[in-house]
Image 1 (cartoon, one colour):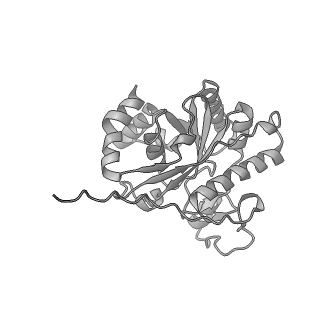
Image 2 (tube, rainbow, N blue to C red):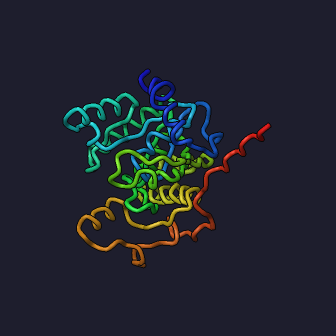
Image 3 (cartoon, rainbow, N blue to C red):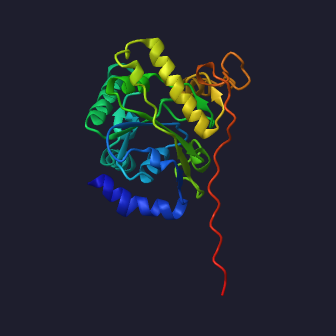
Length: 265
């Protein structure tokens, strides 16, 4: 109930008016049945705008810190995240992360939509980073199709460190569902998991037009925090595209042109 109140009455209409979000490929989201929405991750607001533009409920996993904040702001954030169905995950990995994925698996078994950011964390610089194989395991265990998503412009509206996004158009492009049923029963094969993950990341790259970096985003963030240079230009870390594929001939999507103003009579 809280989810739909926020989406249709309180937050949703306000975001529509201020940011005029646009979407392409909405028809690729099934009207019913389980599906995994696999998106690039550029800003915190990704988790607000993608669900806003879909007719069905969509929840993501979110970092544990969103649920453990102190003070009024921390409690409000935690309450909001719980209200919209965000599933907390300990990004330290291990049993905590496995529990979050199991929660997502139960949601898929119930025939719902489940959102996941394969990069595991926000991109530190707007580029696309190596995907973690948890999404592949989830797809193979659930049998649900994976729908690639490209968020567009959210990193410009809300760069790292900015709390309130600046006013600009926010976009998203949704690709066609990806079927991995050919790998049924192979969810414990790490080579298959990597292959499936790279295929998903390549689909996201084709939609987003982002440059790809073949390291994990968390690793890149740690390098930056430690004062090391970014990996740009470092050939041992740069790959043509996920899985060594050739770079697709695509560009970053642009918003649709505004409709012309009606003639003055």
